[in-house]
Length: 72
Length: 364
Image 1 (cartoon, rainbow over the protein chains, first blue to last red):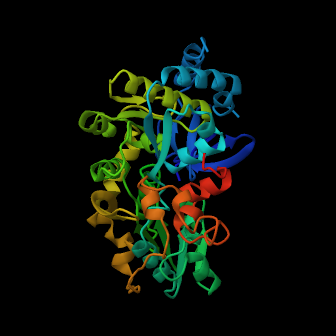
Image 2: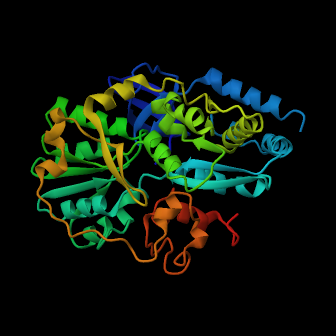
Image 3: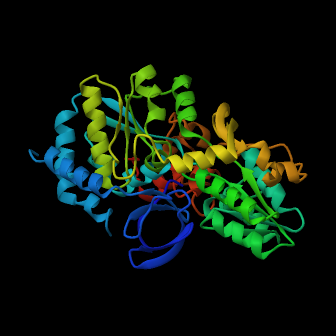
């Protein structure tokens, strides 16, 4: 039950937000991520955003993966 | 899909595996704690691709699987009460308790509904004021804050017919209990990704500090897991044990503070009964006194029959990493996804279901 998927925040209304999950729209709660803004990606778990995805870290991880595996 | 596809690049995976193969010089044993990781490791074929030096073991990180029969029997007893609607995440419905299951209770006429989100349970309560709506609260720290949020919302909106059976469990305490059992020697642990989105990485510090075991928090895509394994191998090969985060886009060291605050407002820590392990102190959550009005056990009188375990089921020792499903005589015989005997075959993250769906005959 640790499943969480990335979702794009399209609009915010109080504690709720409308998100896009790969073309599917859903209403979710952002009560656990009050700092979220429209345009952010969140990790969506059972109808709640549990974290805002750090896009800079995402890119750094990919960069790290490329560097680590360069010689192989 | 953004933040998914990039972490499934097969070319990058191949090269990273080459690096792991090159760096891993001694036999080591790694445990992926989380059921979601077990599935990902099997599904993406990672088990078959890792070098022979790395042995993978599955841990008890499947909240459905570790729910004890005593607790499931309570949920089923509640389902049989008049004017009650039971709401639950999907997996729990098919798990056999001592004598029945929520699905069988539904077939017998009880009102049992699967929900995707605890918020849906709250809305069912709001829409059915003449019924008592009880949510079966399963999950680790990923889910507990959402359940806390629903309780908070119920209080705010004056929803007085909503109740919770709190069966939530905590990861770091059970990791410690497992290590203290000493049944399996581990060199490294793949720490749960989304639990850590909530609790951060600091709670795992006792693992390298007290047990000299490598500890890395992992995401769920194949490249996330391979990066995690690479970092674990590096710690072990250099004898430098610490907690690291491989899943940096999803986990901050301090975790999600608003979620933790909400959890601590609504819940307090207490003992919990873990299938296969028994009662572990300070490993579960219960509602604080202020929120007792929402507690199902306090508000409803149930007297379930004494619980019992299914004969021959090895779920308990599989959850502790002592056995694999291949050791179980029932696996693929009397226990299949269509006719599960134990929870590990029911849950989408259960070890037995994963071996059944993705493993080959040799369990690799």
